[in-house]
Length: 247
Ligand code: ADP
Ligand code: MG
Image (cartoon, rainbow, N blue to C red):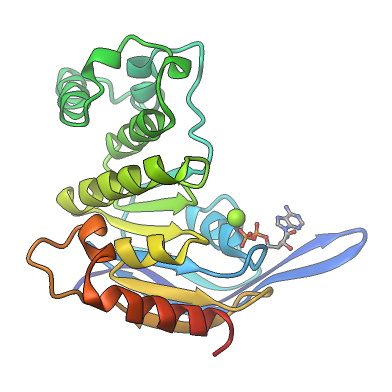
């Protein structure tokens, strides 16, 4: 196995005139190439802080983050599509900025649009699309830059339940098909279990690792939706629930 991300003894606090807010405390874990890691934890425990540190948006106060891959993709709760650009022009924004807009990348965009059912919306504005379609467009915008590691911060939580199930299923399968490594932060245990290879359960703030639960399903076709109906699902749910509540 090839390690793509190694985190050692990571701690971080926020400082303000009012005082210190410890957010992360001595976290260590690694992510293998092609692995999908789900992270769950109580609201406000430090999940987004962890992703911001991994993405390099902030410097850790203590500990080490070693990223073996070069490129990182970030997908957030809000899709951040620009209303004044068409879907196509939103998707190519990153390519434009990085001067990577070539004949090859353009035809890759085309292939993604087709594959993920957005071709006929290429010239539409974001507001003309459903929440699920917008999230798919945001994912294409991220994938087109071929990230070695995808960081997903509650990317489905703005969607209604029904859409959320299908989009999570969709996106989970896309990430696997493309052999991407991903870290998904979510407060939804079912989502974490249906998508991950392992679930990392964090304690309340400052987050430390409560436990890491490996997930294996005896499914012929291992998809997020099929997992939800698998016999193992309930046991994993109960296990993660217990861990989340400190056993
Ligand atoms: P989560 O994503 O798990 O809900 P966050 O990582 O966003 O949690 O926040 C963890 C804690 O750090 C919270 O108490 C939050 O208020 C605090 N926090 C987050 N960002 C900042 C910041 N920029 N400055 C000060 N405190 C912050
Ligand atoms: Mg958060």
